[in-house]
Amino acid sequence: MTMIRCLTLLALVVAAPLSGTAAESAAHRDPSAMTVEERTTIMTRVNDYNGCVYKESMARVEALPDIRQAADEGMTACQGALDAISETIAGFNFEPGFADQFVRHTQSRAVRMLIPELSLRKGGQ
Picture 1 (cartoon, rainbow, N blue to C red):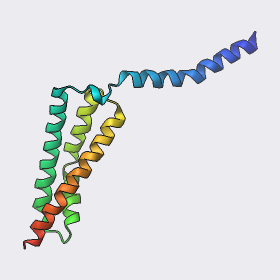
Picture 2 (cartoon, rainbow, N blue to C red):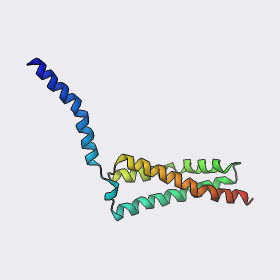
Picture 3 (cartoon, one colour):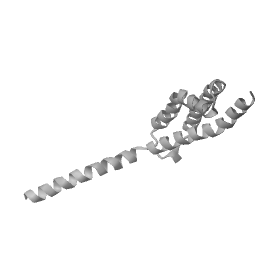
Picture 4 (cartoon, rainbow, N blue to C red):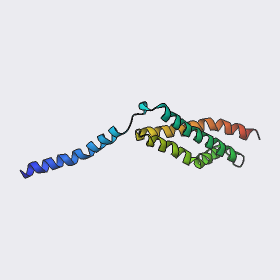
């Protein structure tokens, strides 16, 4: 009888983390279920971030020898706007991986759009 209780207890201990993980993933929404209002809110946050990065980077480009430094400093100054995107997605209860991937994509896209602009500004001196 003791052996059966030990095996039962062991099975419960091993299964507990798995059931918690399944419950957590079931609680998150799939991004494909995003409403128009949610998409609009997220894209507003993305536009806020892009505008911040552009403004902050352009303000620094003249004072720095390398446009990449201006981009880095601009992105650092706008970290709060990037965090707001992640928080908004988390607030809508989408999968955490979606928020991380979306934020990385947003940051990467902002840099790809920004570098040519900084180059033109720096080259026009």
